[in-house]
Amino acid sequence: MQTCDTLLRGMVICMDPQRRVFLDGYVGISAGRIVAVGKAADCELTAQEELGGDGHLVLPGLVNVHSHLVQGCIRGMAEGTTYEERLFGFYYPMTGACDEERSYAAAMPPLLDMVRRGVTTTADDHFTHLHKRSIDGVLAAVRDSGMRCRMARLTINDPNAVPEGFREDLDTGLQETERIKAEWETELTSVTASTIGITYCEPDQLKQLWQWTDDNDRQFDIHAPAVLDQKYLAERRGWEGGSFEWLDSVGILGPNLIAAHAQNLSPGEAELIRDRGAAIALVPDMEQVLGLVDFDARQYLDTGVTCGLGLDGPVVAYGHDLWTAMRGFLTAQRLGDQHRRLSADKQARWTGDEMLYGSGELALELATIGGAKALMMDDRIGSLEAGKDADVVLIDRRGETHLSPPAALIPNLVLGNGPSSDSVSRVMVRGQTIVADGEHVSVDRRAAVKQSDALQQALLDECDTHRFVRMRSRFKWIN
Image 1 (cartoon, one colour):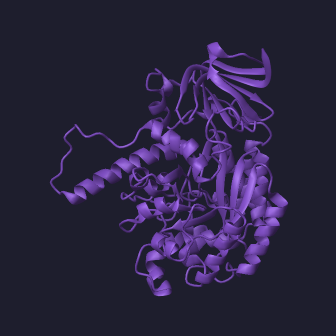
Image 2: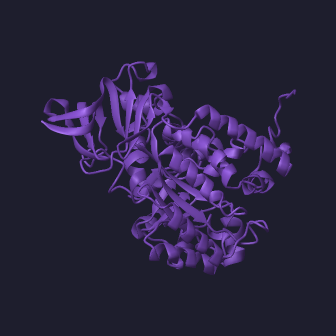
Image 3: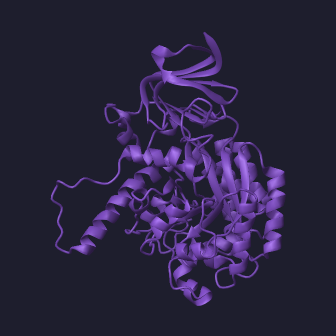
């Protein structure tokens, strides 16, 4: 018998190329890596620590491919506001007022939201740099959470989309990216340069930003099409085609590009994205919350484009829950399909023999191996295979009423919004336990909430943004 550090037992959902599920399986872990996966009956390992067993599930750690963690300080304030009200009214002022210490306090609650529900990897896009070390606060929170992170530092400077004071020149942006890369990169954290979207950065500088990522073998993360593209792309860039067609025309659309949201394409752009090898960060929960019934992931998945699931910032991704995004992927797609069907045929009626698109299995793929591929990390994470890093989630199903009976376990997991935090027995990153029995092993959740509450109150006072709180509420709020 061979010895390993940790042995996990239960139903093992591998997400390997064969999509094997061992109803009674095991995962062996040593020195931060998976050393063996298989049927329990074939296990030839003993371990210093053995966890799980009957009634437990073993999954790869979930992967969130899009977020803005500093928005924790304005969580949910999008409700009752227009896009421009929140962007210019309180988003820029309140996040811009976050220095390193404040950014740490803002980022920690959404990080705890994610990790306590099994997310082991997150991407983050940071673009408020009035305080140059604001991003350092977010990275410190990520470090303390124990999660894996791909951090993109976004340079923004187009005067038509970015308020004065929030703009920075390209040289400063790249110098700061190099500084952060030197100070913060580890085995779990990587740093890259990007911008919000095409119309947030001067055209020549946008290409230079991308060139830095290409020269440094990094990913280029961009919102495309961004909300302001239609408003500014033609008049500022002299371009009448689609956003991805423009990116391709200047040589940016390629294997190192990941585009967030990516809805409302021009005809043929999905095939263009596939042919260039770019990836898509789908953000279905945010799209659904904002009532965007034209969400369409199918255009990518049926075409063969690599896709993962993201959450966006806490200002619109309220609970910061990737399980909700999995459910949102299915419901948003099906509502979008129905919207398109009715738009094409006003007399169309539900007949009962339609096959709804997607499945719980597909959603779980997007949140694990799909996200890992989208972030160019699938050689290390996203599935339970020997040789990969041990980013693993162990769930105790025995008290989860919504996961019983178990015949349709994966649909129940996804459409039931995942496991409760209390049932998450372990979350491991590179074999290290960061969550045990629903609680983070080193971060005080209640202290994080207290600090976050105090931060928001201070920012509302300092930035004079109280008018945006509960904006257009019908309730009477009494002190």
